Image 1: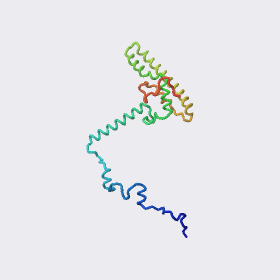
Image 2: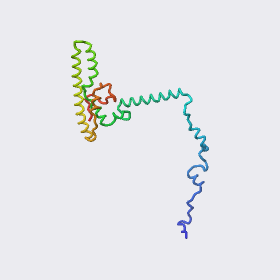
Image 3: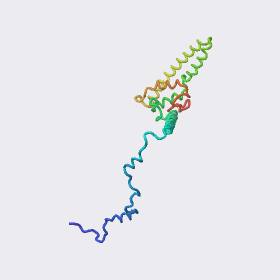
Image 4: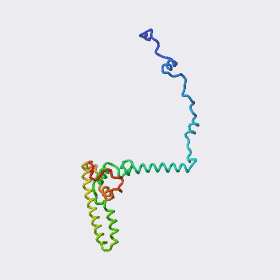
Length: 197
């Protein structure tokens, strides 16, 4: 048996579609304004040729696009942005090592100028032997500097990142230390004596 309504004078709560449309402010059966395109028309609109009509223009556009992408990557790599760096250059420890090497004066930075000077001096017979001995002495001194750099940097990285997190960065730091400062990639991000914390 159905219960009688609480308020017998109340209007029914179900409204017609016209009343709902009037309440929402839309006109009934308005639609979206155009017919749904057929599948054939939709596929035809999405089709692109496998080979462009103007191959020279397409090749020129592709070259311009790849040149722009290479320029962005080159600038990003020089700036030291991880996304653009090769895998061997990525990571916090490598960044710390780069900053530490760039902040100190490395004997190996002078290797290329000293070698060039020795090549010039070997043309003079009286100082050729002395210049070669001086080059070997300088080379040994640069190797000792790189070994000391490796030990100091390993200790600092272990102190900062923990012993289990320390990668083997001695070779990486030594190779960077032997390069002239302007020729390093990524470019130095710190000034001299501005050691990382």
